[in-house]
Image (cartoon, rainbow, N blue to C red; front, side, top):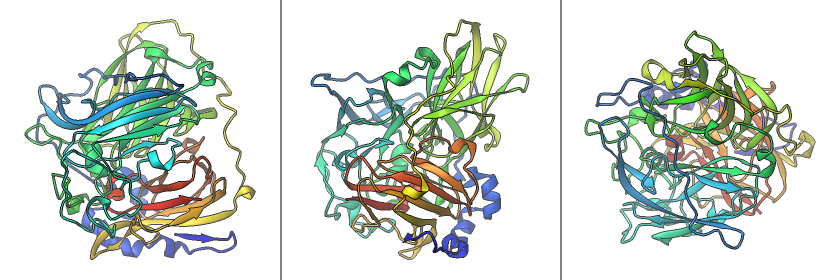
Length: 537
């Protein structure tokens, strides 16, 4: 990590440090940067399920239930969520144990209004500590889900200390002097003074985020406002939340995951072949394998989240006759674009969200539209399908102007420029994933800035790294000195870095003071120390 003036630079060789990455690349079967740029799905190793898998497009698409508030008084909504073990029939005829919010995978969706605060009381009845992070939320630091701010289960006794993947402290961050640890319950308060968008909440416990999400701890939160409601976009049953994940199943129907400690109590990490990321061979959408959804011959709004640990997708909508349907992007991670952007292929990295309109009116009744993953192979090439069931009237529209409240930050507004290299490195005698050559340490201030400062960050990677900033959204300024790609439009909170590529982003650190994070959202990289602290004064 390095701050500098515009006129000074780091050499490409120094920032990439590719030579230091070769050991881990060899261990994980990763190829050279050029090949990885073409095939981001290989940033990881794939588990193979040991149970029979269903044919695609047989299971109906589930729609996550909307959680009801327990109170709506005082201009705020209050919810209660219990984190508990449950089981579900994900594969037909097979019961799978899960860790859940409210017994469901995906978790229930929270529907919220812009500027109306939400407080969620989480109760931890799981066998391990947990942390909740509302990804994309403009949230005070006390409720942001810092990875050592644990909620301990009742009767929890601290496990044998470990040094983690570079976190110089005891088990689960208990030696972080700033950690705020509670037992059994914790209130998380979200002011939601932010643009309407699709957020998601998930576990964020230090060193164990990846297996906790894999076991089911993820759900959606949608923020709406009157301005968006007035646009005439597809709504009601023609607005579909789509949480895309990949998983693998063991012979007994449980979720297979290569943890070094399957109890997730003491030793973090995964077996060596999976150090670059864990990929499953089953694609789930809203918790169902390769589902199918009946649609009208009309426009639909697809709220797409890639909640996979490490898998990248390149989505394409293809009809029976091989025709590709337009994917009209109307929103990014942090809400509506200024104007629609039309794609035929849409790349989506872990934790990215895209708000997309697909028009099924030109598809014959009975026709099938497949959502294909161009980065997959075999069964992971299919994601889901839509079957056009009937003709229908359609009063929706896609306005030429979607939003006028996007920030207009200019390069000249930036008070400083920082550079960060995301790369593999040596750590405590083994391999880890590092930012600026350093593993995560909650006791170290990596970046200190001031409230309302505008900064430009230059990010470089060795392999694919989806980089997420907490608290703030940002705009992509350039990729390797060239203009952003079409899917970089709008306000984002996660950007996909490609091997050897330099990405510039600009943001204003507004909202709240306190301790936040930025990190890789390949969840295995994150658990192996690819996080850094961001202190806003």
